[in-house]
Length: 314
Image (cartoon, rainbow, N blue to C red; front, side, top):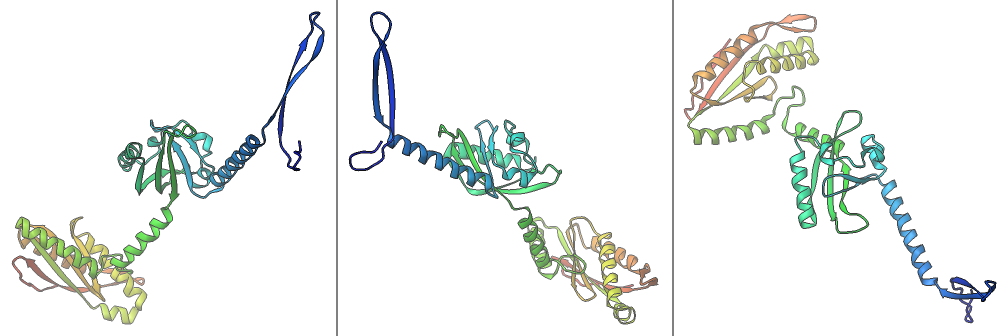
């Protein structure tokens, strides 16, 4: 309906019929109500809901609504791309049953804090198993919307950070490990040595450092080539690992030099035993370039707090 001023208005017409004493239709009573503002509000709400659906269903991040009992009320379509599940498959399941068992206690604690305080400001990191069996790492922020009658739960916005974590770990590994052998480098060795000495000062135990230098390496490297020389260093690193305990450190100093850090020793005799193992394993021929090559070596020992160097040669 158009007003005198030329504005279009939406009207709602209601009518009621009435009859005379003989039961025949006598007339109609009608009302006309201006519902323009109501319709405008309704259309705005529909548009808002449509925008919300587009944002949630087309987003790359996983959006979830979790009830206070841990039951999943809603998950957007990103679940399929991120974890291989259709959102309808997870509705009603307990979210804590899907989290890696090593992470579930932390997730429960964070969830309880969100319910109590309204928000968990620090990103929560946890692992969830993909349909293909692979564990994926997610970073998530949660907001308490339990009192919102349209949501009735905690809203989580979660992002898959598995690949990013792998890159970060790779960069960190390269920063503290030798690229050729994978052993700790000098920087990581110094850090571990400092911690070992600090523990030894508190406990009264001993720390030993073994300095290992390969003989005949240069000759093999020059005659058989650098690739063979690199393979020799890798084989040496594996043999050294067999001579020490799981908690000890083997590092490559550079070139053909290696260092072994022995922690928590009763006395220096333990270091001498390891040194002899190393000398024995170096005497065994190395299969290189289709031939067997022999490498001799030297081992020097320094013990803390009683500092003493005992060079030994095979």
